[in-house]
Length: 108
Image 1 (cartoon, rainbow, N blue to C red):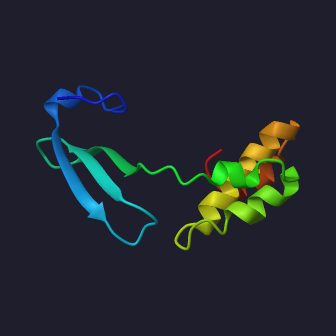
Image 2: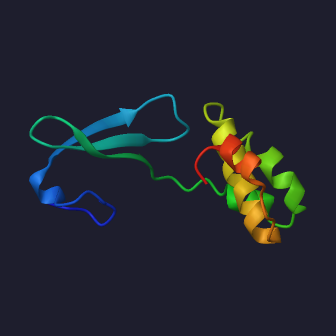
């Protein structure tokens, strides 16, 4: 059985391993792995399915406040939330991010 979000080539030929529940996250989570016959990972997905409504919390706020606000949403991954918000703000205002900064941010 395949699922809409699977991006692995020929997922029907891969073994599915599901780890749930994942603890130490806000809400309920699970991890899904697709492995080949040699147990090499072809796809890994981390699923959090709850809507927590934080999008509404930042609506109407000045855009420069958003990265600081969203980094406080989670005690585990504040850097990820901050970085995602910074990238979104760059796109919203049409900023050209210098190459040196893009390399410091990791994948862009």
